[in-house]
Image (tube, rainbow, N blue to C red):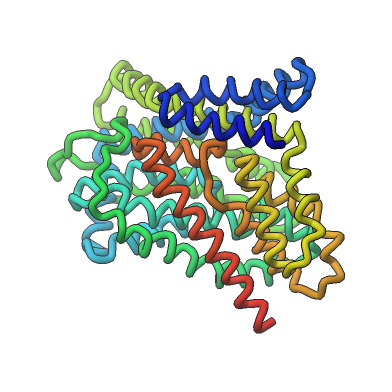
Length: 433
């Protein structure tokens, strides 16, 4: 395990000091970690391939088509139109809070990456229109997306942990909101106050010259195209429980992220591009720019996934869980600290949360502590200090076009604030339950 930690530190040094390409660095570190830990070479290769595939999966479509939709929203003026409305409704003073609320509403039904790529073009347009730092406005939005993804059902980790700990779903959701809202405020609008003067140049993909008001699409069309992925993804909510038939199957089919992004892209292309007179050659050129703009992001996320998979193959998550399981401390804090340790080692918040629950749920069953708080404390711990081995770290870094140091000082701190405030919320609630 010391070898794996040393290689992780070497990866950090290589990325920051030697400026090695992140994807290459991850592949080298993955090979080194697996071989030095005693795994057979073919098993190491297999783990790397599995990590690459698992990390990309549907992200290829989500990020690729999401970037294409974002490019259309930017170039057509739809993002500019939406940003005008947000500015008019919130004003400069309340923009960070408004972006947090938008992130919260979008983040409840959507995965973090999906919500991020949907809201990114609108965020950058609002920042440009208001002449405020994209980071100042982006941190509240991203904090809300992270909080909802990490702490609230129907997202994977909270839902899985409700079953593992034997918690009640409705009570978990209630407690989750009581903890998530203060956490989002602290990690969002409050933390962003320290970022007002931080100058960054976000992803050039969405940096388009402003259009004249008469050239902008209508607000209805702009909002429809921007929110269509969200609307399609939440369609299953309206299907009665236990229903079946052609309509139900069609809705479930359309609500798959892959299909949702394809349908949304085609409709946005028609409403904002072809209907406005653009020919197919111009539209395809936009697509090429969009895909090339996120290609390296996808590779880096895949590399982080490969490294995480090798760490899991070595058994680093189990080692950390077992080493902490016999420590005599509060069950709430124990779940949090074990999940935090696995998160730091492996990178994936979902893996950290589910691994912790699998290791500790039976041992903590007789502890007399609310299982709902065990769910939430585990989920909170799994969010701590996202760094180089987490795909979310690289998504944030590349979209905001920041250095590794800047990302560690913003995104990683943001995630830590959520984790710590989540723990504090669980401990406070435990005093009254």
